[in-house]
Length: 453
Image (tube, rainbow, N blue to C red; front, side, top):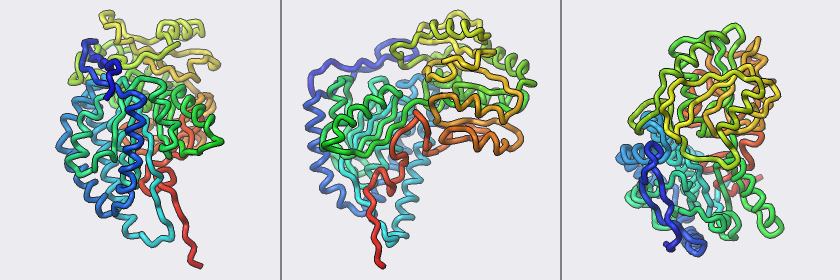
C-alpha cells in the first residue's frame, strides 16, 4: 500500500480520532485490477458445489463475528447497536441464506436451457450506511456468480475490511477474489469505472456520485460498454392513515429519526390525514422533546450524530427556507446538543411548491403534510425526483389507489423497509441500469439461452 495520507476516522459520538487507515494509490488499484483478472481465470471455473460449500462457511463465520460486525458498523456509522443488529447484521444474514437457497434451486433446475456465465471483474462502490449489508448484497452475489470483485469502501465508514478479510479467508475464499479499496483520491476512484479490466460497475451513493460515474462511463462508450447498476437518492414518503397512538408514533418516527435522515431507507416526508393533524403535531412535539442525543452506540436514542456533511447544503439555511415558505416548525427544546448533533425538525403547513419537498437533503429536516383523503397522497408524494420506497402505516389494508399510484420501487406496510431484505427496483433518479442482486440474474451473469428445437 502506498504512502498516501491516511484516512482519519473520527468517532461520530465524540469527534475523537477512532482509527487511521492507509489509502491505496492509483498504481495500487491498477495492480489490484490485474490481480483480480488473473484470479478470475481460476475462480470462474469453480463448481456450484464448491461455491456452496464456501457460502456455508461464510454463513457460519458470519454468525461467529456477529458482535465484531455490529460493534464496528455501529461506531463507524453513528447508529445504535440495536438498529445495526436488526437492519444490518440480521438482514445481511437473511440475504446470505437466500443466496444458499438460490444456488440449491439453480442446481435442481440446471437443465433449463439457460447458461449463466460470469462477467469478469466487477467494481463494487459502497456508500457508508449499512455497508456490511450492502457488501453482502452487491459484492457477494457477484462472487457467488463466479466473478471477482474490487470493493471500494466509503471514506466515511471504512472499517468493513477489518472483519471481512479475515472472515473470507477462514471461509475458504481464495486470495484476490475479493479485494477492498480504501481511497479518497478522485483519480484513483475513477479508474474503478474506466479501466478496461473492469467489466461491470455497481455503485450506491448520492445522486452526485452516481451521475459522475455515469458521465465518466459515457465518455468511453465508443470503446467499451460495461454493465451499470446505480442506486442513488431516496426522498422516501411515509403515510400514517390512522390517528396517533404510542405504538404507531414510535414505528413511524423511527423511520425518520434513526440515522438523522442520512440513511437511504429514511423517510423524508410524513403524510397524515387532516382530521388527525392536531394529534400528530402534538405527538411529534412530545416525542422530540423527550429525545436526548445518543452518547454511544449502546444508547437507543433515535437522535444520533451526523456522519457526513454535504457540500452546498446548510442546515440553518434550509431551516430559513422552510420559514420563508411559511412553514411551521416542530423541534426539541433541548439546547445542549453537540455540533454534530443537528436537531430533528419537522416542518408543516409548507407551500406545496417548496423545493424542500423534492430535494434529497441528507439531514434531519422532515416535511409533515396533511391531506383530506389517503388517495390524495400520490399526487403530492410523486413530485419528488426520487422513487426508492414508501412506508404505509394503517390498521386497515391501504387502498389500491394509494399502493398502485405511488411512484416508488417498494412499498412496505406497517414496518420500516430497512428491516426487510428487499431488493428494491427503484425508479426515477433513485436508480439506473440493471437492478437485481440475484446470483443467476442479468447483472452478475451473462445469460446464454439455448434452443434445442
